[in-house]
Image (cartoon, rainbow, N blue to C red; front, side, top):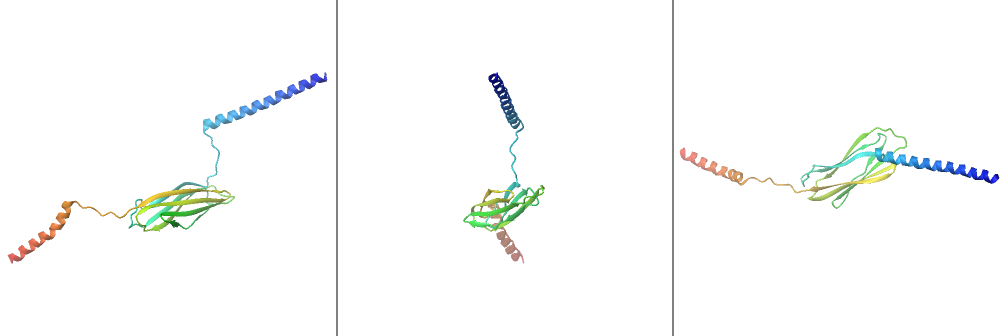
Length: 184
C-alpha cells in the first residue's frame, strides 16, 4: 500500500510540473506574438534627439567665414551640456560635447544650438566630427561627422557680345567728342 501511495504522489507532482511548463511556454509564446504584432522594442534611455551638424554657408568659398552649427534636442532642461573647443588636424576638425545627466531630471525637451567659427579656409575638402559623451546617470558616447568642400571663388563670365559692347563705348565716346570739337 505504501508503494501505491508513493506512486500516486509522484504522478500528481508530474502533472503539476507539466502544467507549470505548459503555462510558461504559453506565456512566452504570447509575449513573442505580441512583440511581433505590435513591433514592441526594448526601451532605451535617450538623452538627446535629432542631432545635426550644419555648415554655413552651404557651399563655402575661400572668401567666406565658415561656421559650423551643432543642433539637437536634449531630453531634459536639467541636463548640463558643455561644448569643448574645436581642434584641427590637417583638414579635419574635432570637438567634444559633454552631456551630464543628473540622477533626478525633469522630462522636458529643450533645443540646443551652438556655433563654431572656423574662419576663412583654403580650398579643399574638410570634415567636422563631434563626439558626444554622456556621463552621470547615463553613460556612453556617439560620433557624428559632416564633410564639406571649400572652393575657390568663381569669377562671373560675361557673354562675348557684352564684353565687346563695354569695350566699344569709350571708342564711340571718343568719336562723338572729336566730331563735337570740329563743329565748333
